[in-house]
Figure 1 (cartoon, helix red, strand yellow):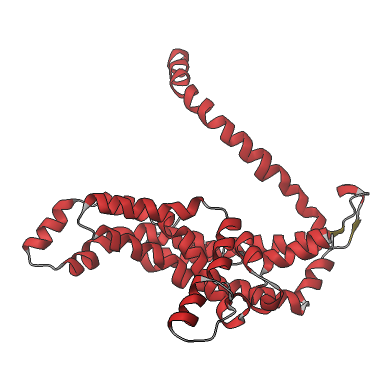
Figure 2: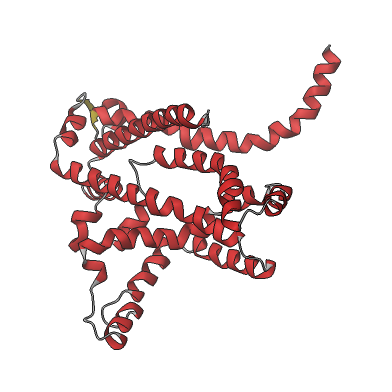
Length: 303
């Protein structure tokens, strides 16, 4: 019995050693800092520290729940996430289906490679590109509007009615190719005999996509949608922060930028921690609820 255990240990020890750095880093950087949430129940002072700061209970939670500015940024966060789900989440699915229909293999590889490239650009670079393209003075879009179509130039980045669309489009442009990789992998794993049988039965390419490709993609779509819904109360800081300006705060100010201003600029650490804790709890509840609903409706879920 002892020899069997030693042999099993020798076989599995390399695997444990391989995963050990990941487990240690996860514990150090994701679990140990959790104790910091206690400052959301304190009037935290960097001079007094965690354990000597005054305890105030739910003071900060009550404050931001009664703050009109917080509800404005919560509304903006939810609206932008809703747009991201409607347009940004569906874009990689449509893109993967369209690229899969390209017959020429080399051209398909070129399209995929080009679509991946924006993912590796930082949001600093992407924001600079969009500011240049949409510039009212010499931006490409305004050159077309003014010189080709005879229209007046438009200050796109200062138009509240357009700004959310710009944010969503910028994210789609940057991430659509990279986000489609998982869908490409699913499509590549579909048995080609299914398409051959459908073709023999007279099914068009559109029918093959509807009845073969999409059903095989559903499990991956459900999985990614659940993960997206879990983060619906948060949104990427860099994208919004680098593209927004004071003229569009009413439609672009989200929780992450709000927390940045009152947390880092005004040093209200306890208040921002309380907001972050509330975000996390709401995201967790959203994940659990959407997972249960998904299992009830489709029979699939994260767990």
